[in-house]
Image (cartoon, rainbow, N blue to C red; front, side):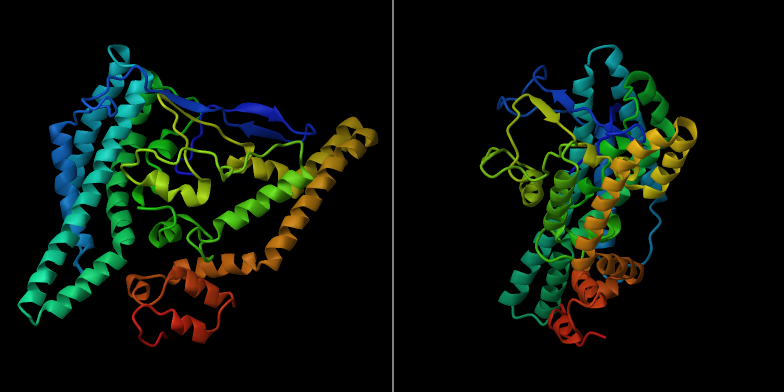
Length: 409
């Protein structure tokens, strides 16, 4: 869920020769050879002082800009350039060390140490701003200051927009790293850390890392098309479970490992400094303690191209005509059976989603994303506006969910 990983794929033939599915092999990182720190648990990493200073300087400036209401545009080109230069220097040296004293697994872990430093720094900067404002609020209340109300309002605004601010700052920082990776480090990685068809940006700079939690509104509206469901999971679990059930029922030949872990599995108590394992429990269940070897397995369902290969009926119809021309009527008759079966599966999914008014929600989500603004975010949550536009709630219920108590227009 947290990482979209695309390593070199191998081919898995489907029921006919019309389609082939890409099956992603498992990935793993062996941490057994890394030296542990004084607590015999963490791996201590020394971050480049230049890179650390550039991250702190830019994170402070971006946080100040993002936490200022009605802030004026600021030119960050100078600190952006400094961060890109220091990141390029650190990563070039790190990737070249695969030739000398570091294994591939060690380098992959050390790369994440840089990302963790950024995420920890930005969160600490935002928390510091809120803590200072809390202290000022307490002082104003003790002195019965006239500014107490304004300070309380600003504190409420910061806490309500915490996820959006953090996602905004992290996204800007990650954008600088992505620029360096795509323009200057791609050839170095291909030479010293080849990953075949795997896109390293999908793994290391996944937008989910920028968000405080997978269900944060700012993250969902920026990265997803559908986010109008109720509940902490934005309705994703029921939708995903329905798809897995239908596919498992109609195409049992292609096994599907459920995304949600079975009840009772996993490790209840794990060290979770960043809180990511806790935040993903609602989507994937409890994480398991993997000790020294981190592994991740994948299903064919996690590759979007596989769904296109299975359910692009137009393309399969053309392939059937080609089969009839090249191999005759007998081969065509046999080949059309699985195609007809997939057409029935697609019809079942369509009926279920139409019954759930999912297509209407998709259209509403697109319109909400187009018209969304910070001013609108002050009045209503995105999911409630989606539910109103697709007819799930009326204007009275929409007004009851207004955030500031004012009449929503």
